[in-house]
Length: 77
Image (cartoon, rainbow, N blue to C red; front, side, top):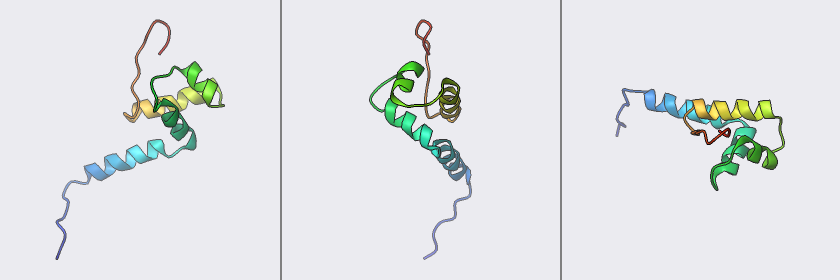
């Protein structure tokens, strides 16, 4: 029995982009740290040893991929 052909590969392309964004160990650590609730960059850096620029770069990649959201509360994002 022949399986139905999927005419639109966009779902696979989207999944590949999502997996690509999560492929870095640092990003997986960030996602794990956020599983129990929101944290700002300072709180994340208290749990994950890295530089502030490196943390911000990984957070931005996750945000751009739609994996994380962000909001501003006072001076914290």
